[in-house]
Length: 218
Ligand code: E4P
Image 1 (cartoon, rainbow, N blue to C red):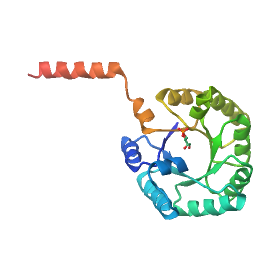
Image 2 (cartoon, rainbow, N blue to C red; image 1 turned 180 degrees about the vertical axis):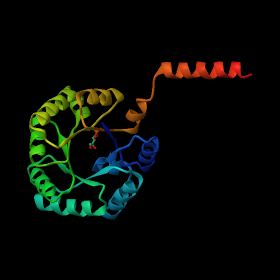
Image 3 (spheres, rainbow, N blue to C red; image 1 turned 90 degrees about the vertical axis):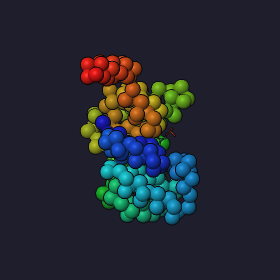
Image 4 (cartoon, protein in one colour; image 1 turned 30 degrees about the vertical axis):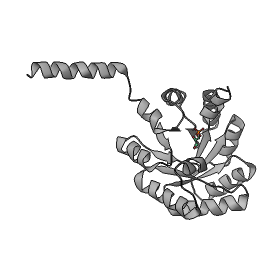
């Protein structure tokens, strides 16, 4: 399972990269705004900075919602670095653009996916990744993990190459359950990734090992 970090914060990206388990980064306009990144040039420079830190794919989202605009923006983003994955919203012009980028060999991430039908369309259009937002579904009392399961079955039925990128991950159990279901990738905050490290018995056990070592080496 690939681990992507869902942030535009360079320090957190560096920390995840240093941990040695990072496979990529996802960003979105809200995450860029949270870091105070605005204006075309600053946004572009920020994507370049992220690409310098990570070894894997970096999703960069288009702002346009019309076909021509999405194509123009996506081509410019893809030019920045081979690591860039053009993130395209699940809308009619977005689906058309996914097909265009796929035909050009440009990697894409179809974002804002909330149903199995949308995921099926994204795969048919040749998306590299499809991003079902599980946390946002949970927020409205709908089981986000059910959607991951449905998409897994559909993609396996037809051997689609599109990778299921479980997005809007909020906590470590989301990651574990996505791994059980067979999501190809998860993207979440650094806190959800580092929470996987934690177990009280590990802390208690280590404390005892170190205390026993100290006693017998006095
Ligand atoms: C996915 O690529 C999105 O950036 C992200 O996972 C959305 O997460 P949120 O629902 O926590 O904003």
